[in-house]
Image (cartoon, rainbow, N blue to C red; front, side):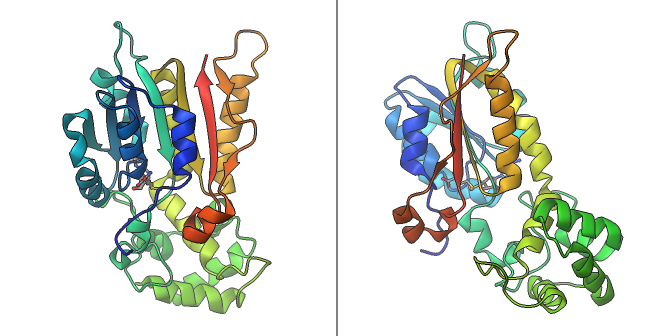
Length: 302
Ligand SMILES: C[S@@+](CC[C@H](N)C(=O)[O-])C[C@H]1O[C@@H](n2cnc3c(N)ncnc32)[C@H](O)[C@@H]1O
């Protein structure tokens, strides 16, 4: 269905976060509101949810999805990195700011965004070189592609796309400047490094597009920032669930969870609920190919 987004690892998230009546939940990446609706339904009749997203278009869809829950759902535009400030009243319990039972971060972008050519996320759809989650943000993909020095562009492609041919691509982009559209960029990359590669036969521009999106939105820095903030808002016994979609994100989540769960000289602040990440079943991938690379990790505050 165009204009929709199927929540990934839906049952697994709900089982992991165990919503109960009266509980308080934060969804830091509300998207179309699929997971949030599940959290609200299972915490009926009086569970509450605070949902955040950078993208006003996503919030519009989420508002419709969550309408049946009335005032139990609170929706705020903003970055999940601002969660502590936004949740100040919501998260307070017994005078402390540790009142939240469960927090979800479903990282990356939604189908609503990928399928909208005007957002510039997809190399298969003609659109502007944009890629911002927040349309008010200053940095666009066009600026990186057309204005950053080739060496910096190559670093972005290498670090955020794990693109081994980053220099070759950066040189080709430099020579083809200015580039205005997603298809122009995809063609320059394909010409520079050739056809589909590897066992999974990725389109040659896949890594370049991923890298630019991560750089435009500061995604890795945001994940690093939010993890300790989210944990600080949880009640003892509260849980944080994070779904990541590529190895760079997953490494940050895994390292943080592990460090916090393995401290030896004091009681570790977190317990790992998923020792290994929960991955999608073949059934889910058949229904929703975009769920393919999802990895869910859950911790509980001790
Ligand atoms: C995979 S989607 C979430 C889908 C959602 N779980 C659902 O069921 O519909 C990820 C969402 O996170 C949002 N996002 C990305 N970075 C963000 C940030 N730093 N703060 C808030 N939202 C962010 C994106 O705009 C996107 O809507």
